[in-house]
Every structure is written in structure tokens, then in C-alpha cells.
Amino acid sequence: MKLKFSFRGWLTIITVVLLTIVVFVAWPEIMKAWALLDQVNLWILALLIPVQFFSYYATGGMIFSYLRAKGNLKNMSHAKMTRTALELNFVNHVLPSGGAAGFSYLAWILSYEGVSVARSTMSQIVRFALTFLSFVVLLAAAVVVLTINHQIDRTTVIICAALAVACIGALIGAIWLIKNKKRLDHFAVWLTRTANKVISFFTRGKKKDLVKGEVIEKFFDDIRDDYVEIRRDRRVLVVPFIWALLANMADVALIWIAFWALGFPVDPAIIFVAFGLASVASAISVTPGGAGVYETIMITFLAASAVPANVAIAGTLLARVTLVVGTIAFGYVFYQMTVLKHGKRPA
Image (cartoon, helix red, strand yellow):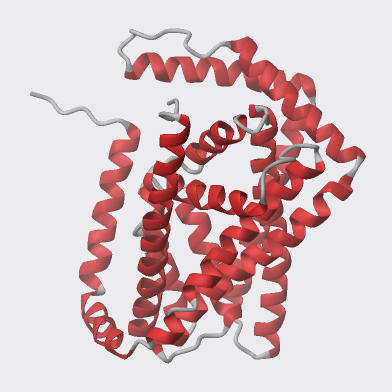
């Protein structure tokens, strides 16, 4: 009997094998890191809880302030939007879809608030775009700080430049696609055909033409209309951009607190660069929440930046495990409450 694996299946196997090799090679340092966990200051570590909730508050603020500026969510409080952001993060952690699951989940939740799927998707696009832009701004500040402190080398500069180019390039690519209706229509046709081929393949031909071209075209037209409105009044992005800056700083603060709790506070500028690298890599990872990939890249960069390997491992794992457990524990509870209220989420 032959076993058949999809591309994603093979990618998952390769990822697991590589991570196994990394763990095997780094095992002595992992044991040293384990010993360091005995000296964790639990009072300092407890600061992760309010900072993590503020991170969700800021993430919700990006989406909430944009939709409010567009005339939506009149009756939705910021607290509820914060809860939705937590559920969103939970969904993206348990479903390794590169953020696609979060897009559909938010569209489902906001549909009960009278927000169209296209506008909900646009709010997510705005969120990612502003997160990228604010990240580039903070990355530039981190490079300046590292230069002043004489803690930067050519490799770090190249990595920072590559991150900035990747973020700006992704943003320019999205704008290039959305701004031209003819180009967007061609993309809608290609997406419809590709989606139907993939669905047909995995259902062995039982479901054909499940994705309707006219629905996809209408969806992208609505997104383009929102883009045109943003170009006419860019002021609607000012408040979301401020929230994006705060969200990025909160995420880096979470990692810094974990190292501080260990008794090894690391320069926040170094953590910021490591966080950016790890986040980009985990975003395209096939593992849930980028598990394994995020940690490996974060630890590798910190260790290459003169942070002792055992400290890099202990601090990264302490932050990651604590935050993921918090996200899954609270996110699951709120997610189940939402499902009980609205019924099972559509596929």
C-alpha cells in the first residue's frame, strides 16, 4: 500500500526532521537552559499577563479604529474587539494556515456586526500593512540604537535591510495588485481556477466549481473600493498606525520581560531584530503558530549576537511557552463562548 503525501505533508515532515536535528545538536545547551529556569523571578514573569493583554488591545485597536472610521462597529466596545483579537490569535495558532484561518474567522465574527466580508478582509490587510510599516520604523530605530552602542555588525545590517525590503516589498506588491481593476480581475480569475483545481484534487473530483468566479470578483471589487476611499482620505490610517506601533513594542516587551525574569535583560534593540526574523519565518511556517521555526530562528540570532546560547534558549522558550499557553487557554475559552453563541463556524 503506497502512502501519498501532499506538498504540505512533505514540507511538514522536512520541518520536523530539521527541528529534530537542531534539538539533537543543541542538546547540551538545552540542558543548561533547563537549569536556568530554576532562577526565574515569578513576580517579574507575571508582568507578561498585563502586557500580553495590552498587545491584544492594541491589535484590536488597529482593526477597531479603522472600521469605526469607515462607519462600522457603532455598538461594539473596544473590550469586545480585544477579545476578538485574542480569539483571532488563538485560531491562527491552532490552524497552520499562514493567517488565512484568521481572515475567515474575523469575517465570520464581524458579519454579526453588519461588516461585509470584503471590509473585514480590508481591515486585516490594513492591520498587516501598518504592522509592517511600523515594524520598519522601529527596526530603523533599533539599528540606530545598536550603532550608537557599537553592537551592530555587517551581518545584522544586511538582515535588517532584508527585513525592511521584504516588508515594504509585500506592501508595494499588494498595492500594485489592488490599484488596477483589470489586474485585480485577472487575479480573481486565476484564484478561482486555482482554488477549484485544489478543491477538486483533494475531493477526488467530487466537488467541482465550488468557488464561484462572480463571488470572488465582487469580493475584490469591494476591497478595491475600500482602497480607493483610503487613498482619498489617508487620515483614517493615522490612529491604526499608532496602535500598530504600540502592538509591535508590546510584542518585543513580552520577550524582554522573559529574559529579565531570568536575570539576563537583553538589549531590546537586539530582541526586536530577532523577533522580526522569527515572526516572518513563522508566518509562512506549516507548523501551528510557527512552533519550532520561531524558536529556532530567535535563538540562533540571539546566540549570534553575543547572548549566551543557554540564556537565548531559556529566555526564548520561557517567553514562547508562557505566551502560547496563555493564548490557547484564554483564546479557547472565548472561542468556545463565541461558537456557543453563534453556532458552528462555517468552513
